[in-house]
Length: 427
Image 1: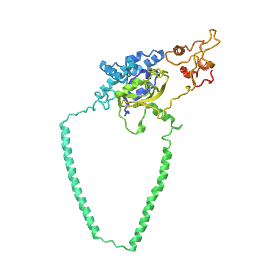
Image 2: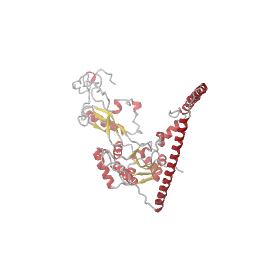
Image 3: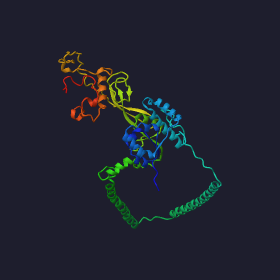
Image 4: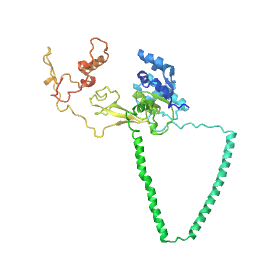
């Protein structure tokens, strides 16, 4: 008999298809049906990826478009959560398709939420009423008769047991215990023998426990002998170690997009990771301004979008299965004041021929970046964007490992402010 697969229907996003993670064999082993929207296939522009998808995935892939009502519900829901601006049309269609399939498989939206922040679900699961027949009625009547017969038998047994107890108590009352030396001597060995018999299993018990612990000591640790088993367990998504039998997920969405994950969890739709594990809590990082407490999900920003200060710090955040968004701040946060000891030098002009450069002593204040709208910052951003678009097959191109620019400027990020020290060594 074939084992039941943990997921019935998986809705795929673009990231899982392009990266081929998980593989097609893993998806087929873990689910009964694989579904996506037509816009996802059109987003694949790479020739090799398109060929792989057409030959390996398309024979097992079902393409379906969601209804306008589902798209409208997801759009309104994402607008309330604040994720609508960062969601594209294919992303909204993926979430809408998952919502539509969830309603079809479970007979309604009783296990979902209609609004973000809703404490409970929309309703209770529908009860399936089975039609009563004559056979079931006769079985119920027969069962009632059997129950009556059992109750009569139990009452008779109870009366017999009470009579026996009364007779034994009367016999004990009539008997007289004679205290003699023989009885005392007979009792003493028995009292000594009972603990001896009781101590034998206690002495052997630690040995058996030690043997059992020695046999099972490697069960929780990853050793070279069981490394492959743990890897297969992680890839297959086996979560039997918890011991709780999990029910089959009717519909689950596989995506790595943070905005989509946030909307899916707040609606209470099932979410899967690339390792085929069910995601119940989201934890990621966003940027939070230390000056005005503004938050942004654009991790490439260096200046606050509200106050314009370079005070953005990376903060961990999580989204629970109830849709609650939390920021995890440090208990004793101390703002780093490095670079504030020395004042910024006055703007000093250079010479026309370039012999004298501006910036004061050691050209420390030359082209300081203090705001996002400076021309130096905009110019640096355009240069970094141009570097990423370089052709690797160009004859005049040298990789950064040969030029020495690999670890400069924090991975391509512009240095903001004057730096840590005036007298620090400059490259």
